[in-house]
Length: 356
Image 1 (cartoon, rainbow, N blue to C red):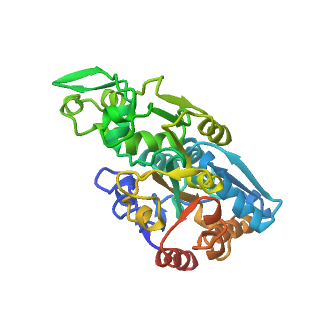
Image 2 (image 1 turned 45 degrees about the vertical axis):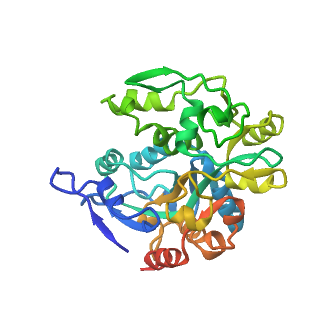
Image 3 (image 1 turned 120 degrees about the vertical axis):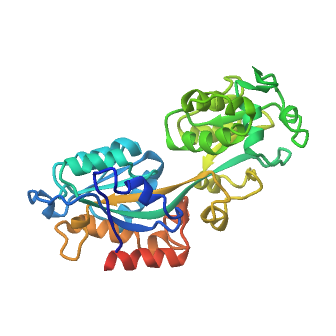
């Protein structure tokens, strides 16, 4: 297992620097040593119970692992990544039986909070990727979308000369003559949430950031707002995934929806995946980061809970099962419910690191 020493002084590398030093697929498991604090705490975790706190988009993965274990002692609750990780770092002791599934890595500020609460290390593993797909009805004319297309189609305002003008595009062909002359309609999950955040970051922001009018906005917040502000008449926000499926089913030709890949798999008899920026959501393209509508799913816990003489057999059993080949392998049960798996060599290295 790789130990990363993170000091609280400014001369030491920050946690974020450590985590971004390697690619997201290579970052499989690291025991993050946050400071030299001593871990102490009561033994309430020794009875095997554990709390699994999952970002909503990963809850089906958490449930899949728990179902495979068939353990009644595992509680699963939903919480967005930031508050879940903050809760882990706000714990009074490292013996709190918590596992967090997150769609983001822990930040330096969260690491500082861990240190302040006497938590000197966390174990991080990567299950794989939550992958999103742009889909259309299979009887619609097929087309390909780029970040620029989506930005020009959906944005409130678009660059013109040295400034901006109100976006008047009505058909996809208005933004790109290679696209069909069908009305622009995008069906999305509302803010906040991981799926919407991925779309805005990897489609809208990527599509707008090279324009001079955007570059001339020097502060990040108004620049991002200009990139991600979307016209109400072109988007339909639907929170529940099943309801988004029905919204697309009932939509006029030309409508596009954003789903986790498993939702597409369940409805592929009448849906078609739209290539994004020339790439398809294959495991190879996702792991190479060529297909970018995805987010890594990380698992965090305290290393004492999964060590050889683990004080919490429930956490250790869950963690080991989550990283097993039966769960995250090419034919694993998490793959069948929407997880894009890591390369085999990375999966093996991850398990070997955990065993050391």
